[in-house]
Image (cartoon, rainbow, N blue to C red; front, side, top):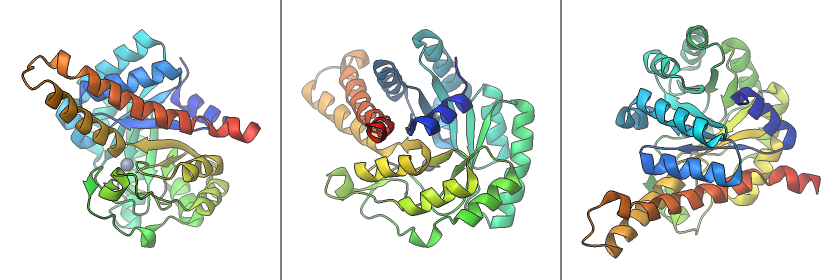
Length: 294
Ligand SMILES: [Zn+2]
């Protein structure tokens, strides 16, 4: 099985991106794994602190490991948005492949100092683990809200990106390039789309040459995704879109079977709906290189 670092190098060479999908229950995990298997593509399964607290850190790791072994598809596990070293160490010990160590809410110097210490501590637990650091403002919470916050003031500059990577030793950078967590109601209805600062992505890539992650991908314009990946984005996070598919299909399944109480009869359509949502994003993220070569 290839390592996550090898998969990211390949994605960069091919001009494609690895899809990262958050999970908080077995329905979402089965759906993401089935999407990866159907397309024979690598995926990153993400679990934030809240998602890990709900499912159990070691329990998620055991489930993902068994799915990876059984399917033969490279399914990697990422500890998304981890705000303390203790929580990061817990994930590293449980066997996670990567950790998003996110102290972007702290002042610059504190973010640098604590992220550098975390890189050293986490690699001593698991030498192959990849650490992602975050600078800039990309909002919080993969939820549906009335309107989106204005994050235009907290965008990452290429100089900051290089300085942060050099000072901390992180493997992957999550920049703020117009992306943000969550979706507005109009995005859920398909009436509005997020747009990205493509030039900024290209400049950050040129200044740093490290793998770049786009957080808050849900609701982003398809063409912006293609351009962002061509400009150097290697991982794209999708959470809210899957959560919306999960909720809408669950409500539909319950409404269709008002007297049913058997979970394994109610939930298969939910797995299918989430799987299709993941498949459509994986197809898009992996079509860019082919388009560029054609
Ligand atoms: Zn995120």
